[in-house]
Length: 296
Image (tube, rainbow, N blue to C red; front, side):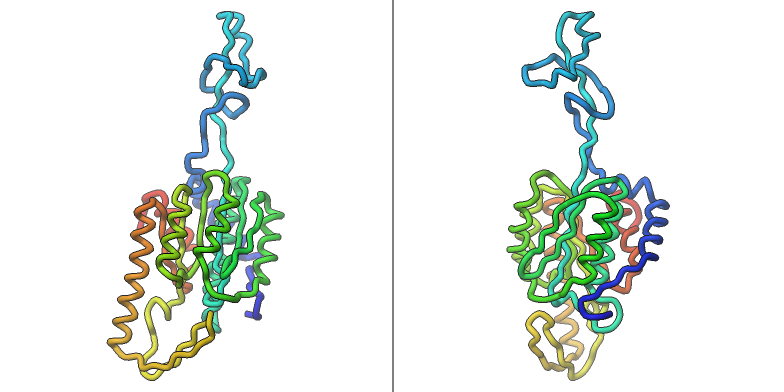
């Protein structure tokens, strides 16, 4: 891949279209949630009547009922409330790994675009914003034009800086004014307290966390004298990787992931972990199935 160029081709969307058609009922209901509410006024289905109160829309008065009862009643409708999906994609330097093959950012980008595509299929609004030390906030809109404009912008995103999820989430939470679907895609290689704070800040929303790792991070696949480089600070660490080092690394990684999982469970959020060697449509299907209590 060229630096700063993360390509998704037309075949990705063709496959995504076939995929969403195959699981259409599950895909639709994943994002719908409790999107229907009872309101007076205009809506999609009349479900009853109640007495008119000052301030009600006069257009909702049922004059036939008035003719029979000589009392003012308004029609009540079941209204279909539109969904807004806010997708936050980690664009810090640590996501630019590995040098060869698909990077964590590119995998995360496919996930983000896939979810945005599904939301677009329901004609709902979405925004994909990127974050590292700061958050680049995108305005939520609907439609395929917005989808492809978003892709064009993200394909040229330059990955840089450290992850500061705490401050970024504080900034982003100010633009959400109603209950929404919030999806955060990151390697979550950040301070655990900062991650917990971000989860709690979005606890009132339908929250999904997706952790993206490379297989070599999930299972340390090196041995002997090794040089590691922190992509965010560009500092080198030379060390000997033996069995005890691997065991300690694996233990700390699992503790970190379990702490995120426990916090998500506490607030009712969902937490998924994928390595970049997992086929992207398997990741989508797994997420959708889990949201419906099926399968794995």
